[in-house]
Length: 112
Image (tube, rainbow, N blue to C red; front, side, top):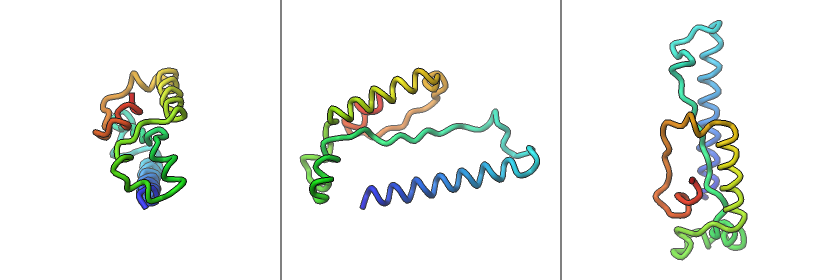
């Protein structure tokens, strides 16, 4: 259920951003929002955790207290490393003004 809710929320946010972008550029380039005043938001989902593996086997595992703050899997750590390399290679890391993350350990470790 949480995954479906997150997917719907992300889809709604993307549609809103697309509409905003369309409105910005449909006026012949003139807009209330000049490009130098706009911010770019990058949404990153956490890397694969043990709870993801267990949840695929049995959906009720997502409700387990033991898996509430699950550790990352080896694949999850590889995903973190790949994203870190991408962020540094693309130069995004030099433009970051704010990072917002979950207080859960697995999310913190996955967002380094």
